[in-house]
Image (cartoon, rainbow, N blue to C red; front, side, top):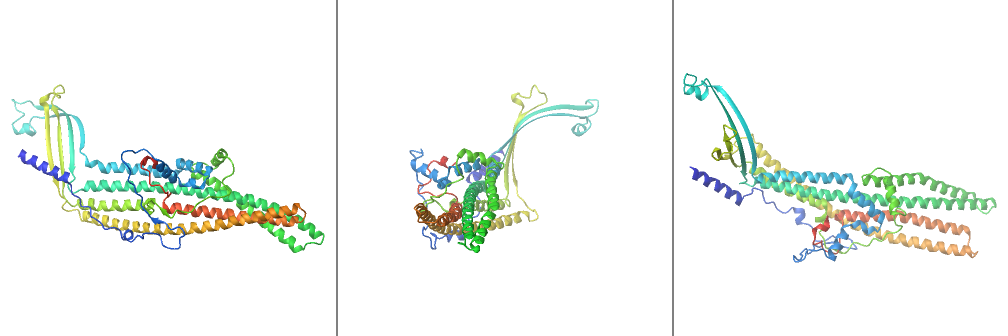
Length: 514
């Protein structure tokens, strides 16, 4: 009998080690099968799905110059060449409350993964007990053998001391526990991708808000300059009108322009204050915190011009695959697939082993004597027979969840492709507008220089000088607006690509990514 039990346990353990899984193999999602090889459409800078060669030498794992270039490219916001922005983003990466919440969610999911993995290992419990029992001699076994008479005591009293170690283990014959572990691991990867998405969102919001403040700061200063020029122009026009050299319509027209310029000021000041205080909020601080940082970095809020290059013709990184939302959707799809296997395994028998070894004695002094040991070993097989259809319903729930996650994954993939293509077109058009407005500002500055020279030589009028200066101010106002549009378009490309692109392959040292 004992040999049969040993054979049974051996067979169960061998089957568990060989393993079998009821997780179904699913076809590649249709949207992924039909993924175009490149971006179609009128893109001056076409962006292809070029994958890097990530093969590295095992002989030397030290970071190389190429690794450093890749690491710098991952800090994609440095392309704006603004130390103040870099300092703000560094503060946001530390203090942003949405990021802190995302990190806490990742820690929770990591703990849930360890919980799901724990049943793969035996469960061991230690216990100790003291039992004191006293009963009449004519009850129980004593009564059955005639206890309570003259030859027996009237009561039986005894004490039992026990110290034991118990072990229990479920043999994962059908792969249910392994499927649950893989599902939990996939959920961990999905939550890690969500953290990267929250990081990208926090950085993007900081960049967008900062350059809104930059544009509004420029607009406030330019409107103030325009008001000064209009006041001078109005004073001269009134003087000319008094001498009969200008019409009343010209005076009223300048008054209207001056009133319109002054009307812009309160709204611009309010918007500028709102943008600046939102910088503090994004860094997880109270409004006013940004003043100290801006004083520390010194100077105005940002640069007057941008030097943003074009997107390279080919990007040697996975484009859609590096987007956090695509990574999260793919990981959650895999988790749903693994849960189908776990639900199917619940329909089949479970095999469990349990054993207990320990010491037992009626006196505490003899408890640790070698002869007081005891042991037991038990194997059990449990087959669910009737659960009111709950187990089959759970299989259907897991299949429906997979279909839902599949649709979400394909939608995410299609949306990502569309967003990248739209972002590239928008950015190229914004760069075009930026070049034109830069030429406009340069032409207005040259015209002002000419009028200033003519005025100094006495062959030009002060009116022409004021008009030329106003033309330059208006061109600079347009440039401030288009500069913000250019930044937003560039930001859209970074969001669509999930962050950065670089001509260097990914670092061979993964620590550079952290």
